[in-house]
Amino acid sequence: MAAGRFVAFEGVEGAGKSTQVRLLAERLAAAGQAPVVVREPGGTPLAEEVRALLLHAAHDIAPTAEALLFQVARADLVARVIRPALAAGRVVIADRFALSTLCYQVAGRGLDAARVEAAVELATGGLVPDIYIVLDVAPAVGRERQQTQGKGPDRIERADRAFHDTVARAFRAAAGPNIVHVSADQAPEAVHADVWRALEGRWQRVPA
Image (tube, rainbow, N blue to C red; front, side, top):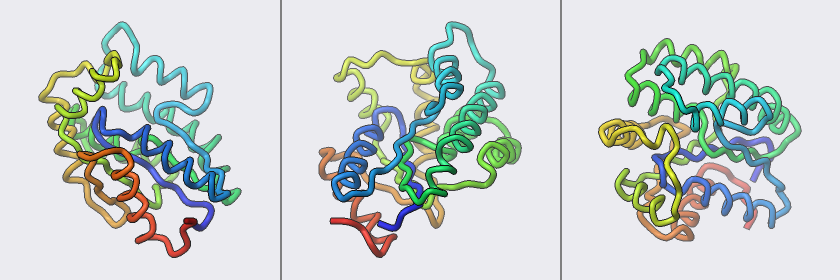
Protein backbone atom coordinates (compact mmCIF):
# COMPACT_ATOMS: atom_id res chain seq x y z
CA MET A 1 0.00 0.00 0.00
CA ALA A 2 1.37 3.38 -0.93
CA ALA A 3 2.22 5.49 2.11
CA GLY A 4 0.53 8.74 3.00
CA ARG A 5 -3.02 7.43 2.59
CA PHE A 6 -6.10 8.01 4.68
CA VAL A 7 -8.75 5.35 5.37
CA ALA A 8 -11.86 6.05 7.47
CA PHE A 9 -14.38 3.51 8.75
CA GLU A 10 -18.00 4.60 9.13
CA GLY A 11 -21.34 3.13 10.12
CA VAL A 12 -24.02 2.99 12.78
CA GLU A 13 -23.41 2.14 16.43
CA GLY A 14 -22.33 -1.49 16.75
CA ALA A 15 -21.36 -1.87 13.08
CA GLY A 16 -17.92 -3.15 14.08
CA LYS A 17 -15.81 -0.14 13.14
CA SER A 18 -13.34 -0.50 16.01
CA THR A 19 -12.81 -4.18 15.22
CA GLN A 20 -12.17 -3.48 11.55
CA VAL A 21 -9.81 -0.61 12.39
CA ARG A 22 -7.85 -2.99 14.61
CA LEU A 23 -7.74 -5.81 12.05
CA LEU A 24 -6.56 -3.51 9.28
CA ALA A 25 -3.98 -1.87 11.53
CA GLU A 26 -2.63 -5.26 12.59
CA ARG A 27 -2.36 -6.43 8.99
CA LEU A 28 -0.55 -3.31 7.88
CA ALA A 29 1.77 -3.39 10.91
CA ALA A 30 2.66 -7.01 10.15
CA ALA A 31 3.60 -5.88 6.64
CA GLY A 32 5.84 -3.14 8.05
CA GLN A 33 3.51 -0.20 7.42
CA ALA A 34 3.00 0.93 11.08
CA PRO A 35 -0.23 2.88 10.50
CA VAL A 36 -1.42 5.80 12.62
CA VAL A 37 -4.80 4.93 14.20
CA VAL A 38 -7.18 7.67 15.34
CA ARG A 39 -10.77 7.92 16.53
CA GLU A 40 -13.39 10.62 16.39
CA PRO A 41 -14.04 12.50 18.46
CA GLY A 42 -10.66 12.18 20.17
CA GLY A 43 -7.02 11.61 19.41
CA THR A 44 -5.50 14.70 21.05
CA PRO A 45 -5.76 15.99 24.63
CA LEU A 46 -8.22 18.69 23.57
CA ALA A 47 -10.24 16.36 21.35
CA GLU A 48 -10.49 13.79 24.16
CA GLU A 49 -11.89 16.46 26.49
CA VAL A 50 -14.46 17.36 23.82
CA ARG A 51 -15.26 13.65 23.42
CA ALA A 52 -16.05 13.33 27.11
CA LEU A 53 -18.38 16.31 26.87
CA LEU A 54 -20.12 15.12 23.70
CA LEU A 55 -20.65 11.54 24.79
CA HIS A 56 -21.05 11.80 28.56
CA ALA A 57 -22.37 15.27 29.42
CA ALA A 58 -25.12 15.07 32.03
CA HIS A 59 -26.98 17.96 30.40
CA ASP A 60 -28.50 18.29 26.95
CA ILE A 61 -26.52 19.74 24.04
CA ALA A 62 -28.30 21.66 21.28
CA PRO A 63 -27.84 20.13 17.79
CA THR A 64 -25.87 23.11 16.44
CA ALA A 65 -23.59 23.13 19.48
CA GLU A 66 -23.11 19.38 19.08
CA ALA A 67 -22.09 19.79 15.43
CA LEU A 68 -19.64 22.57 16.26
CA LEU A 69 -18.08 20.65 19.14
CA PHE A 70 -17.37 17.78 16.77
CA GLN A 71 -15.60 20.24 14.48
CA VAL A 72 -13.47 21.57 17.35
CA ALA A 73 -12.26 18.04 18.08
CA ARG A 74 -11.79 17.29 14.38
CA ALA A 75 -9.83 20.47 13.67
CA ASP A 76 -7.34 19.70 16.44
CA LEU A 77 -6.98 16.06 15.36
CA VAL A 78 -6.40 16.99 11.72
CA ALA A 79 -3.86 19.71 12.55
CA ARG A 80 -1.91 17.84 15.21
CA VAL A 81 -2.08 14.20 14.09
CA ILE A 82 -3.59 13.40 10.70
CA ARG A 83 -1.92 15.97 8.45
CA PRO A 84 1.55 15.49 10.01
CA ALA A 85 1.22 11.71 9.65
CA LEU A 86 0.18 11.96 5.99
CA ALA A 87 2.97 14.44 5.31
CA ALA A 88 5.41 11.93 6.79
CA GLY A 89 4.14 9.26 4.40
CA ARG A 90 2.15 7.27 6.97
CA VAL A 91 -1.12 5.42 6.47
CA VAL A 92 -3.83 6.88 8.72
CA ILE A 93 -6.81 4.74 9.78
CA ALA A 94 -9.70 6.59 11.39
CA ASP A 95 -12.67 5.31 13.38
CA ARG A 96 -15.12 7.87 11.93
CA PHE A 97 -14.55 11.14 10.10
CA ALA A 98 -16.65 13.81 8.38
CA LEU A 99 -19.19 11.43 6.86
CA SER A 100 -20.44 10.80 10.39
CA THR A 101 -21.25 14.51 10.72
CA LEU A 102 -23.39 14.42 7.57
CA CYS A 103 -25.24 11.33 8.74
CA TYR A 104 -25.69 12.21 12.43
CA GLN A 105 -25.93 15.98 12.56
CA VAL A 106 -27.39 16.74 9.10
CA ALA A 107 -29.63 13.71 8.50
CA GLY A 108 -30.22 12.75 12.13
CA ARG A 109 -30.46 16.16 13.81
CA GLY A 110 -31.87 17.96 10.77
CA LEU A 111 -29.25 20.69 10.52
CA ASP A 112 -28.73 22.64 7.31
CA ALA A 113 -26.35 20.66 5.07
CA ALA A 114 -24.60 23.64 3.47
CA ARG A 115 -23.85 25.29 6.81
CA VAL A 116 -22.57 22.09 8.38
CA GLU A 117 -20.44 21.30 5.32
CA ALA A 118 -18.89 24.77 5.60
CA ALA A 119 -17.98 24.07 9.23
CA VAL A 120 -16.47 20.72 8.25
CA GLU A 121 -14.46 22.41 5.50
CA LEU A 122 -13.10 24.90 8.03
CA ALA A 123 -12.19 22.16 10.50
CA THR A 124 -10.49 19.89 7.97
CA GLY A 125 -9.03 22.44 5.58
CA GLY A 126 -10.57 20.38 2.80
CA LEU A 127 -8.93 17.10 3.85
CA VAL A 128 -10.98 14.04 2.88
CA PRO A 129 -10.14 10.35 3.26
CA ASP A 130 -8.80 8.53 0.22
CA ILE A 131 -11.44 5.94 0.98
CA TYR A 132 -14.42 5.72 3.33
CA ILE A 133 -15.38 2.14 4.21
CA VAL A 134 -19.03 2.20 5.29
CA LEU A 135 -19.97 -0.88 7.31
CA ASP A 136 -23.63 -1.53 6.57
CA VAL A 137 -25.71 -3.20 9.27
CA ALA A 138 -29.24 -2.69 10.59
CA PRO A 139 -29.39 -0.46 13.70
CA ALA A 140 -31.19 -3.22 15.62
CA VAL A 141 -28.31 -5.60 14.94
CA GLY A 142 -25.82 -2.99 16.12
CA ARG A 143 -27.78 -2.41 19.32
CA GLU A 144 -27.95 -6.14 20.00
CA ARG A 145 -24.19 -6.46 19.55
CA GLN A 146 -23.55 -3.64 22.01
CA GLN A 147 -25.91 -5.15 24.55
CA THR A 148 -24.21 -8.55 24.19
CA GLN A 149 -20.85 -6.86 24.83
CA GLY A 150 -22.28 -5.16 27.92
CA LYS A 151 -21.56 -1.69 26.55
CA GLY A 152 -23.54 1.06 28.23
CA PRO A 153 -24.98 3.64 25.84
CA ASP A 154 -23.43 7.10 25.60
CA ARG A 155 -25.40 10.34 25.12
CA ILE A 156 -25.74 9.94 21.34
CA GLU A 157 -26.49 6.23 21.53
CA ARG A 158 -29.37 7.02 23.90
CA ALA A 159 -31.20 8.94 21.16
CA ASP A 160 -34.49 7.38 20.10
CA ARG A 161 -34.89 4.65 17.51
CA ALA A 162 -36.22 7.02 14.84
CA PHE A 163 -33.01 9.05 15.05
CA HIS A 164 -30.79 5.99 14.61
CA ASP A 165 -32.94 4.65 11.78
CA THR A 166 -32.53 7.98 9.99
CA VAL A 167 -28.78 7.89 10.52
CA ALA A 168 -28.64 4.33 9.17
CA ARG A 169 -30.53 5.33 6.02
CA ALA A 170 -28.09 8.18 5.49
CA PHE A 171 -25.12 5.85 5.75
CA ARG A 172 -26.68 3.37 3.33
CA ALA A 173 -27.39 6.16 0.86
CA ALA A 174 -23.89 7.64 1.08
CA ALA A 175 -22.22 7.58 -2.32
CA GLY A 176 -19.18 9.07 -3.97
CA PRO A 177 -15.91 8.19 -5.67
CA ASN A 178 -14.18 7.57 -2.33
CA ILE A 179 -17.04 5.67 -0.62
CA VAL A 180 -17.21 1.86 -0.53
CA HIS A 181 -19.94 -0.11 1.22
CA VAL A 182 -19.18 -3.41 2.95
CA SER A 183 -21.79 -5.66 4.53
CA ALA A 184 -21.17 -6.00 8.26
CA ASP A 185 -23.76 -8.78 8.60
CA GLN A 186 -21.03 -11.41 8.75
CA ALA A 187 -18.15 -12.56 10.94
CA PRO A 188 -15.44 -9.94 11.58
CA GLU A 189 -12.88 -11.95 9.60
CA ALA A 190 -15.20 -12.06 6.57
CA VAL A 191 -15.83 -8.31 6.84
CA HIS A 192 -12.07 -7.73 6.98
CA ALA A 193 -11.58 -9.86 3.85
CA ASP A 194 -14.11 -7.67 2.02
CA VAL A 195 -12.40 -4.53 3.31
CA TRP A 196 -9.04 -5.80 2.09
CA ARG A 197 -10.46 -6.58 -1.34
CA ALA A 198 -11.87 -3.06 -1.49
CA LEU A 199 -8.45 -1.60 -0.72
CA GLU A 200 -6.75 -3.88 -3.24
CA GLY A 201 -9.24 -2.73 -5.83
CA ARG A 202 -8.39 0.91 -5.17
CA TRP A 203 -4.64 0.73 -4.65
CA GLN A 204 -2.14 -1.00 -6.87
CA ARG A 205 0.39 -2.01 -4.24
CA VAL A 206 -1.04 -3.63 -1.11
CA PRO A 207 1.15 -5.73 1.22
CA ALA A 208 0.09 -9.36 1.52
